[in-house]
Amino acid sequence: MRSANILLAVAASVGAAFASSSCSVSLADVCSVANAQAALPADGTFNGITINANSVTVNAVYNQTVEAGTNFPAGVINYCNVTFSYSHDGADDSVLVQYWMPAPADFTNRFLATGGGAYDINGQGSNQPGGLLYGAAAGMTDGGFGGFDVSFDTIVLLGNGTLNWPAVYMFGYQAIKEMTEIGKAFTANFFSVSSGTKLYSYYQGCSEGGREGWSQIQQAGDLYDGLVIGAPAMRYGQQQANHLFPAVLETNLSYFPPPCELEKIVNLTIAFCDPLDGKTDGVISRSDLCLLHFDLNSTIGEPYYCAAGSSGPGGGVVGPGKRKRQSDGSTTPAQNGTVTAEGAALAKALQNGLHDSLGRKAYIYFQPGASFGDATTTYNSTTDSWINVITTNSGEWITKFLNLEEDGSISLDELTPDVLRDYMVKGMELYWNSLQTTLPDLTPFYDNGGKVIHFHGEQDSSVPTGSSALWYESVRSIMYSGVGYNESVAAMSSWYRFFPVPGAAHCATNSAQPNGPFPQAQFASIIDWVENGIEPVTLNATFLTGEYVGNSTSLCSFPLRPYWSDPNSLVPDCVYDQASIDSWKYDLNAFKMPIY
Image (cartoon, rainbow, N blue to C red; front, top):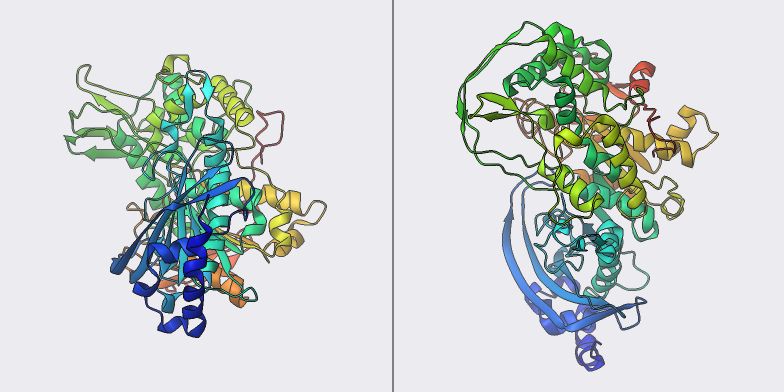
């Protein structure tokens, strides 16, 4: 239990200091254990939660340089790093939360909740700067997993056959919800925000962080004023098993292409589809037109060459939207040949998405022009051949999360499209109210006046861009049932807008299409929408790489699509194209229940 004496001894002096003039109070004045303890929410504020006042630690950070990234611009921040723990009554647990509190003079009555990536529930300090740069206190949680650097997949099982259900729900949505509830109250106390003053509450995250964002809208919609959600790795049951689809398809077709062949197909796709949007700039801004008009058979016979090189050790972060491959570190030979009919057929089958043996569609693949990441083969120097492998995150999803085996294994020999479909059903059913994250009735969030900016790289090769389009359509059809398409889109645009990002990869720019933009100032856009009523009819994006670096453009709000009537302009027109819109609609009829 927290000590009431600490509160009584310190709260009055801290409150008086802020009341006199928050601008005259320095970071050093407030960044102390005693002040942080005094700002902790009072006992009983949150039912079932006890905050441990004795766990509070603080650390003042001055003049930390923030490098420009995809989620925020460069800058310098000063903050008080406050960490403490809480427990759930009746449970033998301890949950760590960390809040970066801006200097009092920089605070702008904002709180930002952040998520993580892959199986990490937080970004280990990489996401909070995006809040500090805009005067927001910013928080993260360890989910109760045992530390900020402990990933969910390492503790999801209590033992073979036994899921750690409290951890599943904490990762699914509960931990970030609690971190936000506690953080908002702590921030209001820390800065002595009066009861009549609005403390704006935001969320920002991409990939797993994007899924976590939608989990908050679905499970805690009344907590947030605005969210920025990128490339959400939602629909967990389908998303995770879908990473196995390329390897299964290669096995079924008995064709294992050299990586250079697939790279050539990608490059030829970009070359053909680049000008379809009215501007030749090395960027596929209309992957829908590419899907409708590019014939993959046209790549057959085209020559490719890649020099020999070292494959290096396997690497990467395990989890949704990430992939790790096994490698023996051997040197790969030079790859010299022409695109085969088998290679084109593989690319076409991949683009068509996973279908079961009855021809029913089970899930979505990546847009044309995206890399064939999960289809990339590995060179076996012993047999002098290219082989396919199971990506570690997908193998772990099957063995640990579905089969509940700590050290289980699977083989490609036992996988078929029907088996993958069944694994998708199993994952969906097992985690429907925790990790699936597909409750499309967002009425509480809407009634609270919340706003959401949702973006997704159009050449994402980790989470299909179409999965976001499917979610957008699910929300529209449920929230506006019986309303005409254009009317419902217009109504939903007043609080939810979806922006595909031309050429962009997964939560990042794309080295294969460097002239593509990225919405770097996304948090500023949601602030403008929430606090100033400036609706993002288009979303500002910055050229972070390529020949236009430093310039800005606009992203079109779906279902409108970019087209350049003036190829010399950096800013496209946003046009309505029914055939293109239809290409983003999916009938996942391999399942008996609707897939939202």
